[in-house]
Length: 287
Image 1 (cartoon, rainbow, N blue to C red):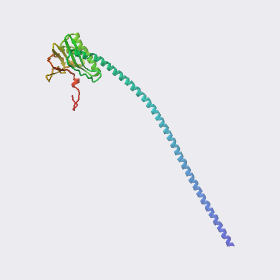
Image 2: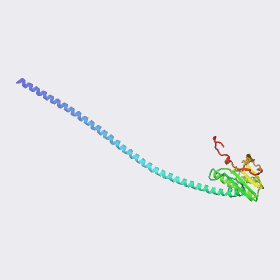
Image 3: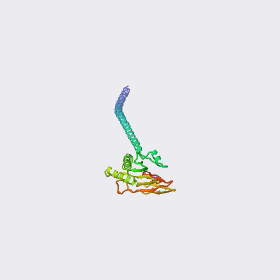
Image 4: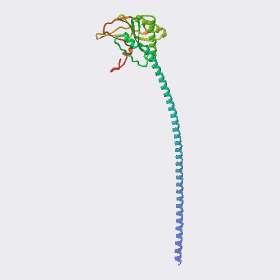
């Protein structure tokens, strides 16, 4: 019995030790579990903070981006409105300028030789007049003085508006020389026009090149600056003479020469400015 009691006592102690050991192990597991739970909670809290700050930063950036888009859109609308306004203003100014050019063209055309007047004084003829701009520095002009018919084909200094102003000035000097000063010979008329240009242009080298023809008593007299008239007779072309100096201030100031040319039936005469000869074209793009 004593041995049995001892055995029972030992078993009780052993059971108690095992229980205590199990309780100790359970407490260790519980502590480890609590530690892990705290770590998980801390990590979750950290992740939640990251997500919160990320969302906050994203919303802040998105708000800034939307604001910039809105501001840019407002600025673009203002810029577009200014551009449209400027375009309308430019279109209006361009229209006014073109209208002024067209009106100047009407004035210039009234001073050119009218077709009805040409028909009354010339036989078969044609005029090729194609200004580079709306108004032209080239002009063709005619007048009649007694039984004499005068025809001028001239090219003034400059193009467009400056050339057109020069053409009006030169036409007025031609008209003044023939119809007011009663100068008859073409070379004397060009000398007069040159003198007036030098006086009025204050020494500037502005003037014109061209040919002035006088049809009188069945013959042709002419004076020419640079541009040589062409004669087609019996199918052959002959280049007539011209002086190599401008109607205006130049290196030479000699008197223009007076040329006379006999006219026979079926003669063809061509008078031109360098605006025709100076056109570029052909395979090599040359004059």
